[in-house]
Length: 179
Ligand code: IMP
Ligand code: MG
Figure 1 (cartoon, rainbow, N blue to C red):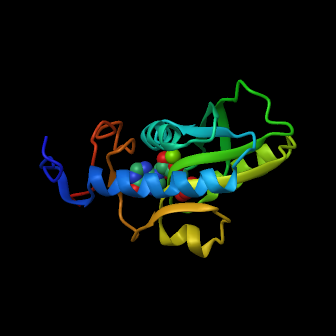
Figure 2 (tube, protein in one colour):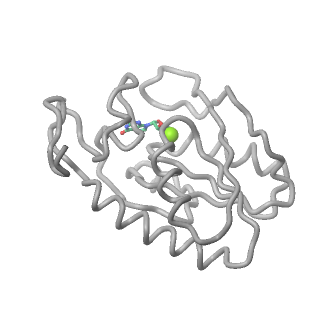
């Protein structure tokens, strides 16, 4: 598939594979600089972070371990309530580790805010956030994010790990759905 091709359900492509790859490279360089010579544990949030985790971790020069969590928000399902249930917990202990949470997209940021509190209680040495995309509400909610790929408008995006009813995760591009 050509880099700019997109399915009929897309209104438009927001970021092409090439644009994403270039930005992920930059993020990885920043992470490498900040964690040089340090221990690093990447924690991905399933399932959306699958692509950014795969690409970011391969761009890193810093040796890193990888673990995953799965969480689900209680509430309407459309907007996040900030009340979260752990569906799959970490396999690795984070006590005394440098933990970097890797996310696909922050909307309200409420899920991540809850996750940060919950992981902080396990006494990591450091705990930071990286997200490929950030929407305006997360900025308004003043969520402290160390690494942001792109700030985007308040639109529903899919592709590159992100889904609508489990579809479009396997697209290389990120697109905006037809409304
Ligand atoms: P938040 O708690 O409002 O920040 O949203 C939590 C989760 O909702 C994100 O980690 C995504 O998995 C999902 N989400 C939010 N916005 C989008 C989107 O535009 N497309 C796909 N998933 C999204
Ligand atoms: Mg997510």
